[in-house]
Amino acid sequence: MKPYSPLSTLILAALLREGGHDVALFDATFAHGIEDFEKALDEYEPRIVVLMEDNFNFLTKMCTTNRRESALAIIGAARARGCRVAVNGPDAADMPAAYLAAGAAAVALGEGEMALAELVGLWNGGDNNASSVAGLLLPGAGKPASTPARPPLRDIDRLPSPAWDLLDIDAYRRAWAGAHGVFSWNMATSRGCPYTCNWCAKPTFGRRYEVRSPTHVANEMIRLKAEVAPDHVWFADDIFGLDTDWTTGFAREVTNGNCRIPFTMQSRVNLMTESMVDALARAGAREVWLGVESGSQRVVDAMDKGASVAAARTATRVLKAHGVRACWFIQLGYPPESWPDILATRDLIREENPDEIGVSVAYPLPGTAFHARVQAQLGRQRNWTTTGELAMLFQGTYSTEFYRKVRDLLHAENETGIWNDEAWNGLEAEAFHHRSPHPFQHPLEA
Image (cartoon, rainbow, N blue to C red; front, side, top):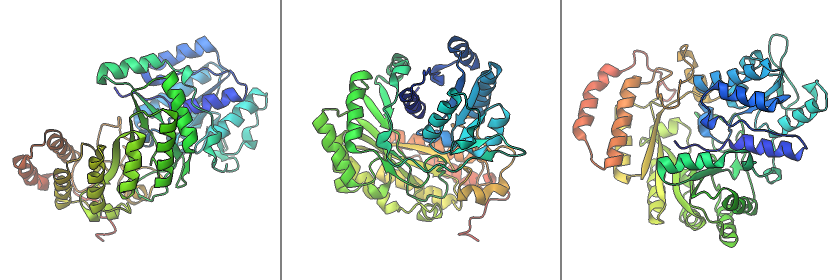
């Protein structure tokens, strides 16, 4: 029960309104099933339906079978009522043939807003030939046909603020207040990530990094306080505040605009310098999530992370010294991780005591170097059913069941502060029996 608004869709809705189009929004967040969408279709009777994933939600990169099945059902329901359908999102870019076969007339690649706004304008003008719109995949003979590539949007200050008024904001407020006693909302200040972690997919924004001006972000926060009034903000950026100058300017604009709202963000261990953390704390940072991934430097190096375990220690200590919660993402099962590497991760968590951890297993995302390496071992199951499944999709060193036990033990120790050496000794005794018959051999081990 941590629902966040469909940010990409709301930005597109605002852009379409600027273009003079009448827009209605179906927000699936609290929907019970496809029948709710069908009711919306019958109520609004649209000519065009645009299905857009929230490209700012990192979990959408990890397409689940549930998500894809829902998307294809939405396309089918819209087509059954004669609607023309366009789709945008990481999975549609990875699997365009499935979405076009379901009835979509176009798949917009990348960030999508500008391509979709142009496409809707063309369709509403009575022109059915979408080949002139850059950045699309269209039905073709045997395989999808590509229109010319669309250059990325560089000046993202040009985009309008999200159309929050189309949402039932009180439904979000009730859900958050009922489950957590506070009301959180999402924003984004930037697009993209310049780093080269080899397991991280960048299907939407790529390796470029575009950031809104501090003034532009602060003005949106002023409006957010007046129209939504959240207690907390989740900045959905892959990396919030890439440099100290921007973050210092942001802190100044927040202070001048009297729009300080406690916030949570994601960053990297190498960016958490004293001056950066000081600026973040002044801007209202309450919690920073860091991709620590592993306590073993050889595993971190295998990921092409460009970071160090020592930097994770320093970043955590600097954040805590400024009163900011230091939280870690941990990834189990990434080759060549073995039992000593798992223990190194355990020991790092014990010694630095992050305020919270999120533990996953290595997930091969299409389009990444990691996916290409393990692709031969991927069986029929290429996606999880839900993002909480934590199933090994390739043969790591150990079985899914074993990694789930490691995850549970890491969480239990971090949450209680009680070290359970007996349980770890028991896991070590089990480890041999959980080894994969043909574990993937990382190039570092070859």
